[in-house]
Amino acid sequence: MLTKTQIKKLKTVDYSTTLWRLKELTYFNRTPQFNIIIFAYLLYNKAIHFELESENIIKFCKALNMDDDVIAEFRLRELPTETWERLSSIRFPIEDLLAIVLFYEPYESLRYSGGGSITPECINKLVLNLLKVQENDKVIDLFAGMGDFIVDAYCEEQNANYFAKGISSIQTAIAKIRAEMLSKNITIEVSSTPYPKPEEGKYDKAFARYPLGIRLGSDNDMGELVRMMRRNDCSVWNFNQELAKCINDKGKAVAIMPSGRCINDSDKDLREDFVQNGLIEAIIQLPPRLFEAPNIEMCLVVFSHNNKDIMFVNAKDIYTRGRRTNCITDEQIVAIAKMTEAESENSKRVLCEELKANAFNLYPAKYLAKKIEIESGVRFETIIKKIKRGAQIPATMLDDIISDVETNCQYLMIANIQNGEIVGNLPYLKQIEERYEKYCIEDNNIVISKIGTPFKVAVVRVPEGKKILANGNLYVIELTEDANPYYIKAFIESEIGNELLDQASAGTHMKMISLDMLMKMQVPKPSIEKQNAFAKLYLEQAEKIKKLQEELAKQTAKLKQLFGKMGE
Image 1 (tube, rainbow, N blue to C red):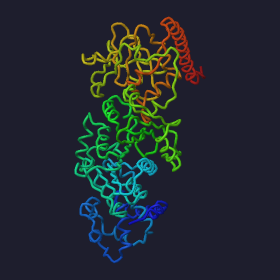
Image 2 (cartoon, one colour):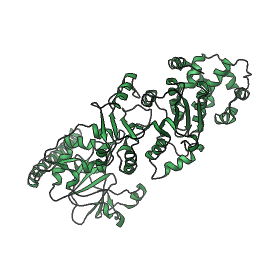
Image 3 (cartoon, rainbow, N blue to C red):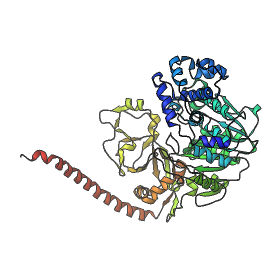
Image 4 (tube, one colour):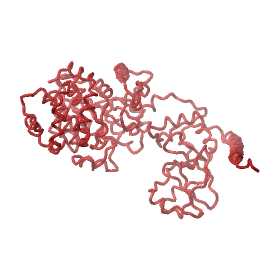
C-alpha cells in the first residue's frame, strides 16, 4: 500500500522518457494507448517480483492473479512474443513505471473507449475541498473512468472507504489496477447503469462527472446507459436525481455538468423539483478551458439535504492561463471554496422564492451580474403580443422544398441577417405545409437569433401576398401596439441591450438565449410618440448608411477593374 507521501512524490516524477520508450517499442503493433498502462504495470511487477517466471506474458499475468477478462480486454494473448521480449529485456526506472500506472492519461484513446472523460487534477482538488472527505467516510465515484478522482481522493484521505462504478470495461479495468496499487479499501466495478443498488446503502460523499460527448454504442457494457441517453426526455438532471438519492441525510455530492442545463427551458421542471426539495447547496461557474474536451461552459453543482437557499459562485475569472488548457492553483481552489461559505463580490446566497420568481433559472451569472438600470424600463414580455420559435425543418426535407424558381414563399435563416438588415435573396420554397404556417413571420415582426454571438436582430418587412418562413434558430416577436419595432431593435443593438442579451444566455462554445430570460429582460418604454420620433431618425440614418454601402461597393468594383483599363 502506497502512503500519502509516496503518492505525492510520484506525482512529481517526469516519466516522459520512459513513456516515449514504451510507445516506441510497441508502435509497430499499433498498440492502443491504454495498453501502455498495462505494460507499465506488468514491468513494475516484474521488477519487484523477480522470483516469478515472466518469459511468457500470459503465465506472468496468471502469476499476478490477473483476471481473464482483463487479459482479454487488453488483448494480451494477441501480443507478439518478440514485443514482450523487447519490453521485458529493458530495465526501466521503477518510479517511472509506477507513475505511469497511476497518472498517465491517454487522451486520444479516451475518445474511442466509450464515455470516458478525465477530470483535471485541479478540479478533483476543488471537489475534494468541497466534499471534505473524513476518516471512515463511505465515498462513491460514479462514471469513474480510469479512477483519477479516486486516486486523488485517496491521496487526501487514506482511511476512507472508496467505491467506484464505471461504464467502460477497459477504463474500469485500469481503475481496478490503480486501486490494487493503492489500497484494499477501494472497490471498483463496471456497470451499464453506474448507480448504487438499494442494498448498497447510502454514502457519505459522492462525485460524478457525466460522460459528455459519449459515442453511443461504442462499448458493449454501456447498453442501458445508451438507451437512457437516446431518450428525448433524458437530461443531466435525471442523472443528478440518482446522484442525490445515493447520499445519506448528512451526506454531500458534487456533479460536473454543462452550464446550459442550468438555464435551458426543457429542464425547468426538473430544476424546480431540486429547488423545492432543498437538494442544492451551491452552484459554481467554472473557468473556461479547464478540460481537454469538450470546449463548453461547465459548472459544479453541490448537493445536500434541507437547503433553504442556494449559494451561487462565479469563478469564471479565477484561473491560471495555460497553452492548451487552463488550470486552478491550490490558492485559487481555496479562494473558490471559501466563496461557497460566505457572500462576496463573486458569490451570493439566493432564497428559493427568488429562484421561483426567475423560473428556476440556476445560472450563476443571472444572480451575480451587475444590475443594469433602464429608464422607463419594463419587462420585455409586457410589450410582446406573441413570441414563437421558427420551424425546425430537417435538412433533407428543406432540400426537397427549396425552389429554383421564384415563388411567393421564402425562408429566413440567421445567415441572411447582417448588420441588422435582411441581406441577399432569401431562398424560395415550393410551398409551405400547413403544419409550418404558424412559423411564418408577419410584417414588422422582430427576429432575434437564438444561438451564437454576437446575437442578431432585425425587423422583417413582408410584402403583400408573400410568406416568409423563419428558421428554427430564430425567435419571432410581434409587439403590442404601444411599442415601435425599430425603437426596440435599436435598443437591443445598443451596448446595454447586448449586455442584457448576454445575461439572458448561457454557454461558452455556443451561447443560447433562454426564452424565459428574454421575456423577463428589461427594455425601455417611453411614450409611443417618443418611440416613433426616434424610429424616424433611426430609419433615416439607416438609409444613409445603406446608400454609403452601395457607393462603397460601386467604387470597390471600379478599383478592381482599374488595372485592366490601363491599356485603354
